[in-house]
Image (cartoon, rainbow, N blue to C red):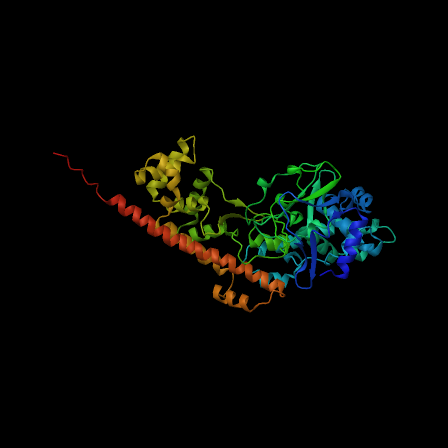
Length: 494
């Protein structure tokens, strides 16, 4: 389907020197899904399917607001936001008018939801507090950096295009659509490149540049960690950047789109933003995937301390956490809290298991470990000494069995407590209630639909954590039973 806006966009691309083949790519525009790109015939790995001049990209350097932006010392995403708002304020007079008219006013990221919607739909999820913090930080950015700019605007520019609402809208578009181009341009809006939809683990097309340095695909974020600061929200991971690490062209002024695998005729051509879980996808790009297998759930250190305080004195708990830190263990650093990750298969971060184990150590074992830490050069090896002596296992076997040995009945009970406490953050509704609500929900109700996908995917991870703890307790009991069995003497042959 070629809508009027798509036809206008194609004419604009031709005027800007963007090269692609109408015989190769089909642009489809639907009210429900927006614009997508399909292959009109079989595409092969290595096929060059488009060239995009860097002058066609909307960046600080190419925008008519360049002098205004650079004179006020703005750069990065702040500067790009000003460039985007400026060009939108020009309407049909903007050199990017043909491109901007295919963009939505804003993307449906949680960033632009109301606070009431955030509290209602994201309660208990990994995004709840992060989005609220993002909104506060981005408002401060506008107040400190954009509001003072209004006095410097040219007389033909309406200040309403630089309101706080317009700034949030610009941030949402930059979050979901900008790419890193090169060292000179920095991040920018790349027409055509941003029409390709994401599919986790299914990159069909890759973008290359020839005059910048960027990270390789191997550095792409491979997790669902969502502790991005507000000014960095959303931009494409290295695996979807205009990456010069796999250069195929020889023109430093042109970006190329290269097929990285075969795609059959009639099939949609996908980009990928990295191996991201649903929390990261919703946070950065405004959507989720029902079968996403890269999600995580975080357990805050504060929650572990709450569990410990329910069993022991505050002094006791602080001493055990202090010993854990002296062993040079740490959780993950978030925007506002230290936390531990539970992977999509329900497996806890090893640092969490070690912390729970240390908190639950008998007093004599704790004293012994404390002395070992004081005497040892290899602090992390001290915990293995305790495990080796307790289980009578050779040192070389400890590393491969450490998780199993740490899963005592008490540690597993602690994991169950943490899973239940983390689950309680979602409110009184059960996972069954959320699944039933999701089945009744229409995808057109984007905010509700994607928040339910996120809630269900996270709660399923907590279910797997409970299973992990139950299986771990049984395995630990089996190991103890084997350890208690007397070894049979082998009879001598006559």
